[in-house]
Image (tube, rainbow, N blue to C red):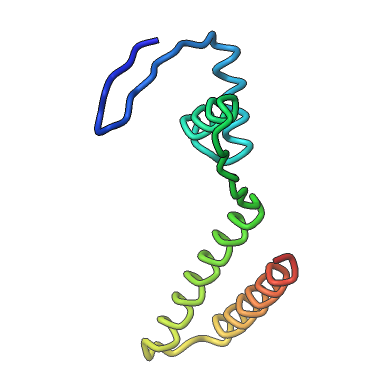
Length: 114
């Protein structure tokens, strides 16, 4: 192991074979934490030090958040077009109403799952 002192912390370097490294990376990705956090807490656990609880974020929440951002963008585009003073054709109006209905249904679906 190689140690490097940096701002009252010491850096520890170690090596893993490719299979072990992939296993470590997969586990950290699954837990949604950084590899260094996982290793640090694993070592501290073995030394009898307190362990920090990892707050797992539900993957569906990330999906719903990105969906809501997309919906917000769509609503902004619709409101911009409506507020621009451009006369809308009847086809545009029905398309907008359908989009608003779809957005409303999608928001309700997301809300029911949260």
